[in-house]
Amino acid sequence: MALPTDDLGWLTWLAQRHDARLPQLKELNSLYEGTAPLHYLHPEIQRELDGRIQPVSLGWPMLAVDPLEERLDLLAFRYPEDDDLTDASPEELASYAADANLLRVWRDNQMDAEVTMAHVDALVMGRSYISVGTGDDSDTPLVAVESPLEMYADIDPRTRVPRAALRRWREDQDSLARLPEQYATLYLPDRTVWYDQGPQGWRETGRDEHGLGEVLVSPLVNRGRTADRYGRSELTPAMLSLSHAANKIATDMMVAAEFHAIPLRAIFGIGPEDLQDADGNRQSALQVIMGRLLTVPTETAGDVKPHEFQASSLANFHDTLNQLARLCAGLLGLDPSVMGYTTDNPASAEALKAREVRLIRRAERAQVAFGGGHRRAARQVRRLQEGGQEDPRAKRIEVMWRDAATPTRAQAADAATKLLTAGAITKRQAREDMGYTPGQIRRMEAEDQAAAEQDPVRLIADDLANRASVPQPEPAGVA
Image (cartoon, rainbow, N blue to C red; front, side, top):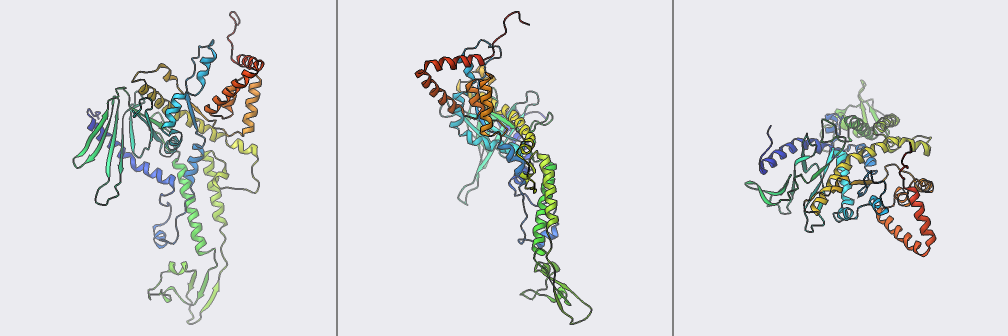
């Protein structure tokens, strides 16, 4: 199929492709939110229990996403030095510090809070997006996260970057006399076009001819494959089948608690046809049981005897849920205790750390995957700031992530101190390893400088220590 040649053609084509994927995206979103309908429950039982027993959702899809997302903390962006700058000055080496300009743009757009939503959407629905555009201030371009429920970007199979993107949304009106207003934004390589939908269809309301030659949308793709550049959800079919089974067992347990956890009474000598409701209507067998009353007809007329049965145990449900929790935890790389499975002998601290290894590796893989989209968005911010010119350094932008592992503060401080004492790292790197933000590090360096000016001997000692920690080239002629 040939690609569209005009703006409205692109809008229609992208909307059709997006609509074809929306049902699956909405289902994944409802599964994560715990609002999806219950599986494995017989329709007849569901009709009889209408309103009496609510389906139980254990929230396992949320546990498949949230522990992973909680380890994806983006700190800042930085420009690394070239690999061949072995004789770089301290000022050049300081380019490892977070870029203050990009950090300012990031925070002015509230992206330190917004990016969490983008990561959650990408893990749940396979992808999310970051859009960039010109703002009122040329030094502060607009940066926003976009939901895959509203945006679709078509990926060029040759370049593996978007060749066009479309975002559609609607704003519901308070007045019942007016229909919801629908809007769209079309992103093309040299322009961004805005539309609203009226009686005659889509109508252009404005455009931005930025002329950058690239679409100002960057996908954050989760678990992409070579044959599927649009990503896949962390809610895999295997995980969801276990989640559905667990929800069904938990709901069955509530039904069993309704019928059998409280002692059941029985009357021998009468049948269900002998019981009526307040309106004189005959009750069904299930309605009688739901009233915790069992009727057992006998051959002897008039021989009516009451009886009370012993309450049933729910231990079989507990054992089944524990087994499903262990299986699901193995798929997700989580400790079974996260899924609600507990034992009389809790794991030691060392065992818990060992069980985190797979989750840490998953988080590090996600940082690499999402880092590409973040770098592309940061580079586009710099191009808009430079009036369309390409900053050669922007191609080397790095994303600074918080360590995906979970060492205690004391462990991180001990490791950083030992490396600093051995001369393997500088004081600045030690502070980064301990989790201090770039702003905190700059403030500490200013305080160090102020203290050193009052103590010249300390200033000389710190300078010698930093120089010793920087790798030096080997002398010529040394094998």
